[in-house]
Image 1 (tube, helix red, strand yellow):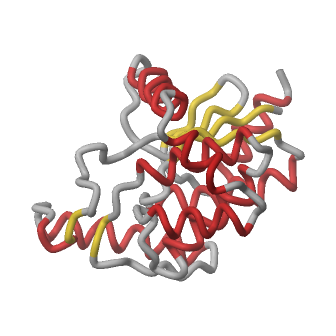
Image 2 (cartoon, rainbow, N blue to C red; image 1 turned 180 degrees about the vertical axis):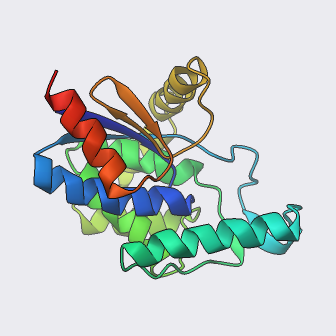
Length: 198
């Protein structure tokens, strides 16, 4: 069964969702396709210092507690950086990886570089290093990210979700049913089983 996941590398819920859907992919033999969704297109190229983001402290503490609880359920320890990187370039490079049949390997490396190693995934030199480690060509990569192709793909994804009134990630399209946000395994499994029974 086809599952489309809309996701951004800088979103902790997306990383947790990545783990959950990867587990379910093996269990249910799912055909999972990942689509980029730029959560914060307003982020400058150099990123945002986390202390400059003006969310109410109570709200941030609630979000962080929720992230920790969900990560703990999956045995994950996330490393939060002091700077929120601009994720656009990482999403573009992942599209290049897709064109070369290396998406899954690259996708995993970017998530791990950010959430486990605390690296700046807005840094093109890091992304080139990760891309080369899975056999991608630097010159081809640079030419691709300067083209209209990755821009158009990201815009299409934003439009697809926007016309359905969805403006956040992770969003999972499981068969014909949308699941928004990281859900307990049993919620995902109920949707999968319902879709498989149709």
